[in-house]
Length: 398
Image (tube, rainbow, N blue to C red; front, side, top):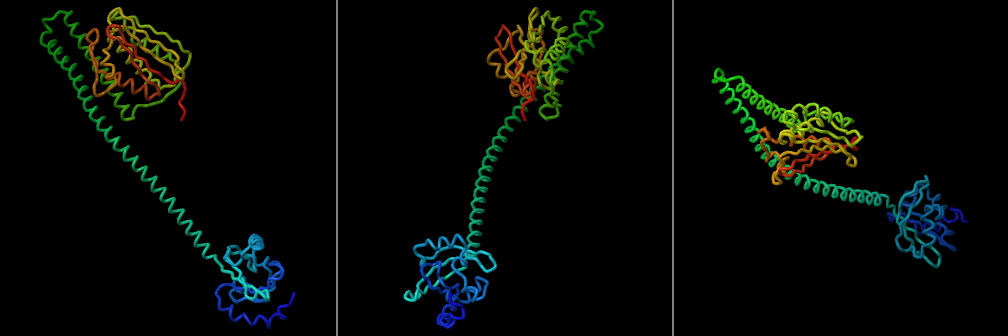
């Protein structure tokens, strides 16, 4: 290879011209192929771009100027007069993106011109633009999702508003019914107590006892109503304690039967229980007792003398089903749908003219659902009624 000093006189011919070009320019003799090319001149832009002296640059080869990938593509290229992209390597070993092309200067002398443009800023701008576009797409997607969620939220709010209006209207009607049901026994209280106060001296012990028994029944009805109303209000406001645990069904059955057997006997009603399940239930004990207590109390109220009430427990898949069946007066089919609605509380007099509000059944349904079960009713007028509710046998999955 000729030394740099030997080529110096020939280089002076083109240096002044190529120094006017802002891009890096290297003049070379191709030889047999590009791998054997000999650099003969370079402008100041090329020297600055590669970070070396002119002598160092002219003693480099294409393999040293381009990085490996670009050099291999360079050797395989069929037309290098078109602008191509690749990467070059500086003296310090750093690489940078470039555009380059080759044009002939003097094909007879086998001289060619390599023009290299540093496109680092261009690539950086392209990357930044790509990031901006990506962010715009992400923001667009986010805005579309937010818009969709806002539409859904608005629909839910509208539904909630309508539901709230319905609930408020239902509760207004319900409280009106409750107020009436509270007023009735107090009217009876006033009438009976007034009669007792005015005619006490003229009454015999039998008449006084009859009045006192009637007063006691009214007091029990009012107490039962207030107790259910208090429980229902706690459920509605989330203030009722909820502590589910594993419970043996016979514990609930036994406690309820012991409580109501004396009352059933007074009406000549046979109260029986049968347990066909060996599984425990997972429920709040107080709620389970309240549900069964209300159902048995209702059954006694609407079952005539010498009737039968049976309480049964049986397995039902992942649940245990409690059923309270009576041989009472039954419920008209048109009234079955009203039993669990607070805006159309259905009540009838018991077989001994016992009064009720229907609140107990509403409370039962809500307590059953709070424990993860369901409640059903089947009835035939003049034959009897069967209330059933299910209770899970294990803690539901979170």
